Image (cartoon, rainbow, N blue to C red; front, side, top):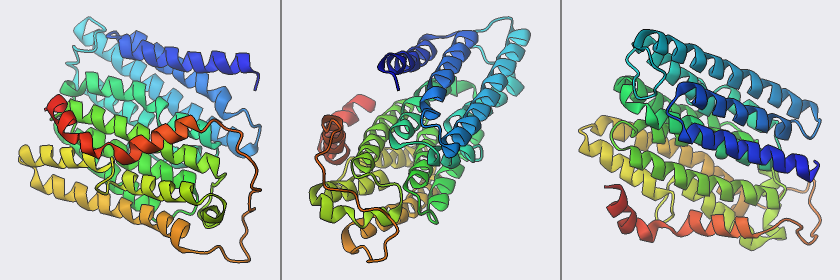
Length: 348
């Protein structure tokens, strides 16, 4: 892609998200979301592969539907209240519709069906943008309007997303689909604690972005998109294979890695709020997710690739990509647990 076009599209992505962050008016927020969607569509379709075009079409249709519902619901709310301000959401129908539309935008269960299919059709870097940057604007809107939403509905969305994210990833062989289900499960963790401690939602989002970036960049470096390709990576780059396995365990939330911190805080907060049953279900759902991360680690570190492997073994050429983002995100995805006391003072 032409570097000028790429720069324009990436700056438009930044502009759309910033607009949504800065707005307290529904029309401006909607405009930011639309700019965001339109900026990523050419990035998704740039490879001209039928799969990429199909994924782009699916993504565009779901995002356009969600945007239309947001516009309709905010108009309805403005009609009954007389103003477009986000803080004044007194119409229950409009509030429920906006939550459903924003859940569709970030891929919360049961509006998650587009997410694995779309991610599977994209290259790893565009998939990384879709899994991290594209979640920021809708999540910012959910956090801003959280007080207006029905707490039971938020809890149901969070629980269902963690369960679906764990359950759906069990049977997958494609790494991008596994990361899509991982994304759905992490979104569930963010939503479940939103009504009690929004700062923990932001902490979980930050950690999720770090760990997902490390995972995607590692897969990009080793050109792996299927599980059986992972079995050949240890001979090519043993150190990267070790850190990749640790990053996956961090995504699963195992101590002493970074991913344990947000899960620990969220379970503690749920217990504080007198919801031991919810906390137990969330912890058990995290175990289901951990199973498929462990499966990837097992393939990577404890199996030797069979002679009849269908994957193409990559040449041991010098890498051309910049390794600084990979190194930084991996270090942060593995080693931030010791600063937990500092973070605790900030979020409590």
